Image (cartoon, rainbow, N blue to C red; front, top):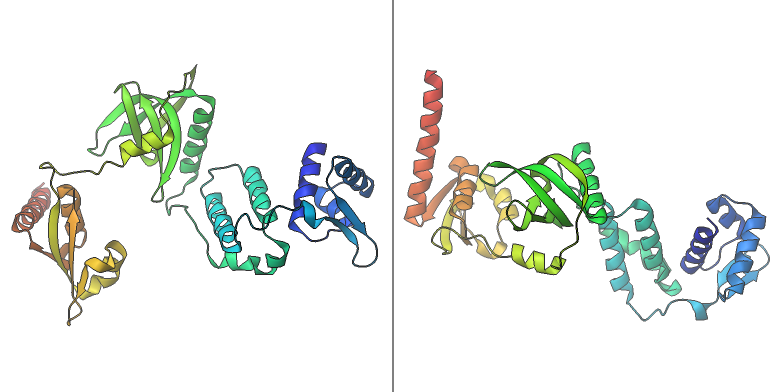
Length: 320
C-alpha cells in the first residue's frame, strides 16, 4: 500500500503545479502525518520535492525533474490522451490500470500548456458497440483471462455459412475491429490459426489444461486476416447503383463520397467495387425498392432471381 501511495503522490505532483498536504491526505484517505512521512520518503529517494508556506503554499516537484516537455507536442499528447480514453470504453484494460496510464500521460503535458488540456475533451472516441449486453462483457472477460493464463477453451461456433461446430482453441489474442471483438487462436480441430467473432461464440468453457504459446506474433496473425475476401471467380465486381433520394443519408454513411454522383432530381449513382457477390446482393436487397442495379446486367439478373425466390418462399408459406 505504501508503494502505491508513493506512486500516486508522485503522479499527482507531476500533474499539478502545487498540491497541499491536506488535499493529498483527503485523496489518499490517510492522515496528514502519513502524507508527511511519504513526502519525506520521496525526498530521500531523490525526487526533489519543494515545500511552500502561506495561503498558496503546498508541495511541488522542481521543474528540472519533470519529464522533457519536448518529447511530444501538446497536440500529440492530446491525441494520445483521447485515444486512451476511447480504449476505456472497450474494457481492454482494468479500470485501475487505465486510470494510472492516463495519469502518466497527463504528467507529460507541460505546465505551461495545462490550460489548453480541455481541448482534448472536444473529441470523444467510443468503441462500445450498440449491442453491448452483460453476456457480451462476461464473454470478453472470460476470454481475456484465458488468453492471459494460457488456458484451453471450448465453445460452439457459428460460421459465416451458419454451420455450428464444437471448437477446441488455444486463445492467442483479442482484437477490436470495426466495433466488434474477435479472438485470434489456434484451432485444434482445423490444425491451423483461425479468427473467431465473439458474438458467434456460445457455450464457452474455460478448461483447466494450459498450452505453450505458439510463436506467431499478433502482427503476423493480423496479416493473415487482411487478405481480402474474393468472389468465386477471384475477380473484382465493378457496379453502378442508382439510389432514390429518400435513402441519400444512408448512402452517404455507407459509401465513399468520391464514388457518389448526385443527380438533379436528388437521386444518387454510386460506382464502386465489390469483392464478394453475396455481399453485393445483400446490400442491394437491404435497400429493397430504393435501388436499381444499373450494371453489370449479370448482377441485376441475380438480384431479380433472389427476389423471386424470396417471394416464392412467402407464397408457399401462405399456403400452409
